[in-house]
Length: 74
Image 1 (tube, rainbow, N blue to C red):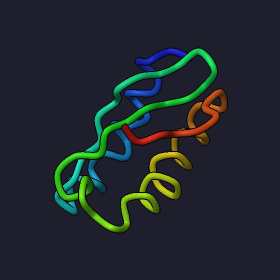
Image 2 (cartoon, rainbow, N blue to C red):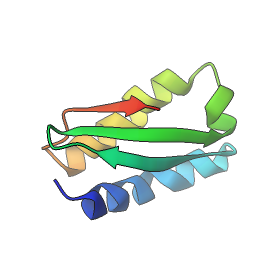
Image 3 (tube, helix red, strand yellow):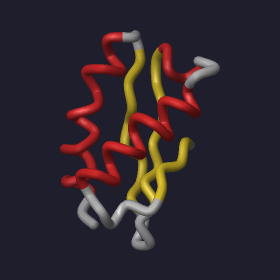
Image 4 (cartoon, one colour):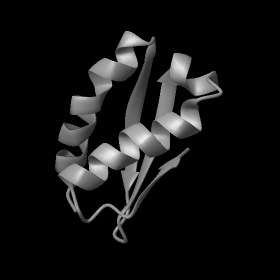
């Protein structure tokens, strides 16, 4: 799985996060399909951040890139 493909998929999600004052940064893509991201801005301390991560970021990444196994915050 290539980091550039993951970044392109994250770029599709980014406008929705930025509209709420947040953002997401790609930290690492592992060989076993784990994508590690850092939530930023308003997303960082938001109590809904786990829901955003699971239902937003992870869902879209898995749709775009079937090799993605899970998304983890760092």
